[in-house]
Amino acid sequence: AAVLDGVRFDCVPAHHWSKRGLADTCRSLWCGWVLTAPGGGPRLYFAGDTGYGPAFAEIGRRLPGIDLALLPVGAYDPR
Figure 1 (cartoon, one colour):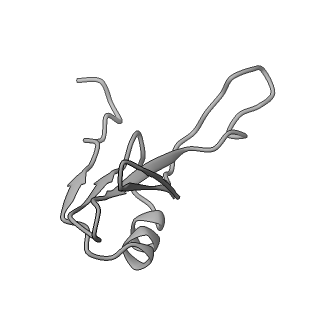
Figure 2: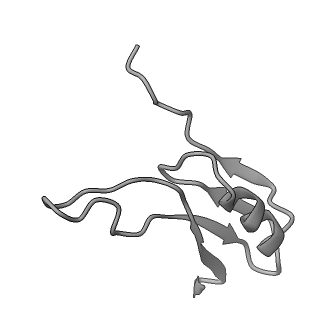
Figure 3: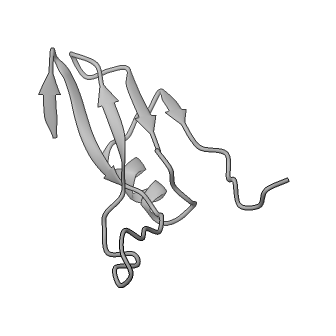
């Protein structure tokens, strides 16, 4: 975690794929963020570019009391 002007930033897991070169599929990490205001609240969760997975339960256990969650809407198929 890091703190900037009293706001705590926790890097949390996300579920995604990646590819930067020919032989590095899914070898980089992905993350979302939980921001906590000074004094312990309110707490905001920004999931980033993620898919549903067990990380959501882990984040809830590790950082309970999320007041607002910004979640992506699954863009699995172009329509």
